[in-house]
Figure 1 (tube, protein in one colour):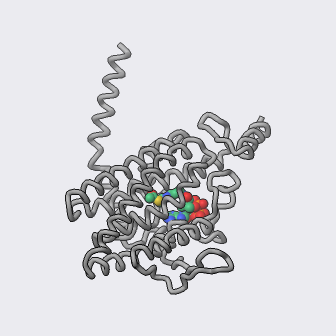
Figure 2 (figure 1 turned 135 degrees about the vertical axis):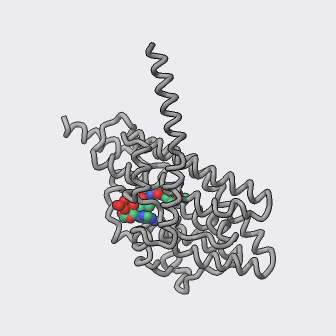
Figure 3 (figure 1 turned 120 degrees about the vertical axis):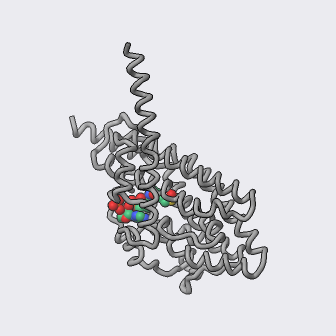
Length: 311
Ligand code: ACO
């Protein structure tokens, strides 16, 4: 009966073992996972746009090949994640519809424009750096297919982070104008990167339950702190200043103090009025419509094969 099933589920979570697709799970656990995994998948897919914007303007063939590989990796991450969501009984078509009709979210970070070439480096350094910080613990998520997808995703993300840092090292070793370009990009991306971790713990409705279920392993504020502590020495190595006058080492706490992101801006961006929301969704919708003939052709082919096999 239900009580027995629930006890079995809870024992698996308590023993820190994985829940697999065929296992019984509470409906709320399933729903919360679909919510998070779908949002994560959508983020990867929408995240291709800000960087895709620079593919034709990369300054050398080498940089173009690297960026192309990175954008393709993101498509791959989206695919693994949609596949992980499908093990929970939803399908990709349904999730795509929810993305393009704004019924499901994607990460706030991808609603900011990429204005200079340094943005490509800073996205690798800060945005992928924040993504790794947030995603490494998800490799231990209680839901098996999500946890396993995260292992490969994280390996690829660390390559992305390093390519960004390496790109920036080349720029800061260049001219004054190039160093200024890196500083200016850092100024624009720093606060939105901190917002990637989500609202502060006191304002995060999902954290407590997600931690109890072993979906999340750390709170939003814990991971944000970890990211700040990890990034400060990297900024020093690049010779850039992080744009936060309150940022300083706190000897007593053994971590950095830092300022508060602009939560009104965060709320505006996740509710659809960030600088590039309309453009990102319009582009995604157009790509989906342009691809309709491919889906129809694949379906017609599958139907024909099935009809032949049935003869
Ligand atoms: N951008 C957009 N929406 C956000 C963000 C953000 N940066 N942070 C939080 N939210 C949303 C949450 O999805 C939630 O909305 P919902 O209830 O309608 O789904 C709401 O704000 C409240 O937030 P929380 O209660 O803190 O939500 P949650 O516990 O899910 O934590 C987090 C948010 C940390 C983003 C979590 O979902 C997570 O770890 N997701 C997986 C990682 C991910 O999605 N990364 C995508 C960007 S990185 C990349 O793709 C390179």
